[in-house]
Length: 482
Ligand code: MV4
Image 1 (cartoon, rainbow, N blue to C red):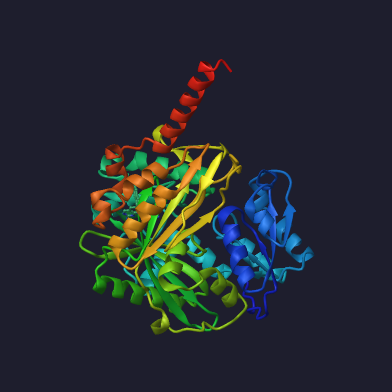
Image 2: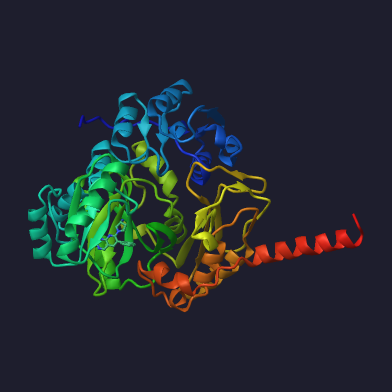
């Protein structure tokens, strides 16, 4: 890949190549920095809040998803509107090295890491190899994609079953298979390969030792263009359903201090050695004996960055912009203090009573929680119509308090305050989680949702009340023959 000189110039105007709550989040950061903003939107997003909040907004007609992916068009618009930089948010173009490179070639600052690092960490096998060379623990596995079934079986046999097959260019659990015995290997490999090929265009699959009941812990990294690297603590993202995170916590209530220290040391050292720049998140699996293993790195701003902001007081999105301008980090590791606990809940428009089917349509009632230690990052509002084309996350509720006990109490209160009517949401699930004994005790692994879901009562009390009101109104109308 071509190397570019860093562009060291002030950013006065930013194009946001994204939608929804994260577009609003980026606009907020820009406003506080005195930076002008340009939004793009599809036809389906024309009534979105972020479109109104931006200084300028441009409709990208045609396909509602391509609107946020056609980067020739997006970079052209950035140049036409005299933007200095593009912020990609998460998803869409955020981890596309060709896009990052194209921006730089066209003289537009890409607010994010260098294209070479996006490419390196986009290849999970290459990333693993690199991190192992840098002294970060990784799980035993194959260094090459599987091409020969018998060779692969031999590797699996050496590692010992269970093993996991993973797509080298995948994500979201696609192209991933757990193999418990050799007789399943071939079938599992073929289905992993086919799924990876179908979803990512590349069928490369590698083998790794499977960790039975891990916690999913990630470290937030921040680095400037001059080799200054800091961490902003960890997040426990173990609570997931079908590889979608639902609840994220800063910092993990279950990680031992000596393990945490080592996790941070290994992470910062590795990022310094690769010359990483801007923000990134290093994901680890932590096993039942507190061993940690690097699994992958995210080279983007993450959905759950809010909880790290709450415990550190650092505005991660503003820092991304400052780093992209070529400014030095204005604090050292020892200046970063991590205070209390923060939990983020992803409020999704999906129906827990219908196997979490995505719900679309009109939000008839909306009231967001507030008060001490509460933050809401939302796309939803009263009268908003949820389009069918995108992710189902319509709001993020983040709460902060000094102790774990207090933050769970606050979360319960804030989730109870949240009113969203018209479309089913996962709020009943979130409310059940903060009442669960194991959650309250800080005991959870990646198996949590799978194990707990059958024990939760997910009837929507707000809906029941609404139905009752409708029934009473109907009875009164009938009584008065209106
Ligand atoms: C694993 C693993 C166990 N062992 N790798 C899931 C998402 C992706 N980022 C990595 N993931 C995992 N990788 C090894 N070697 C467990 C997970 C995992 C998981 C696996 C199956 C079903 C649900 C899961 C939830 C979280 C993590």
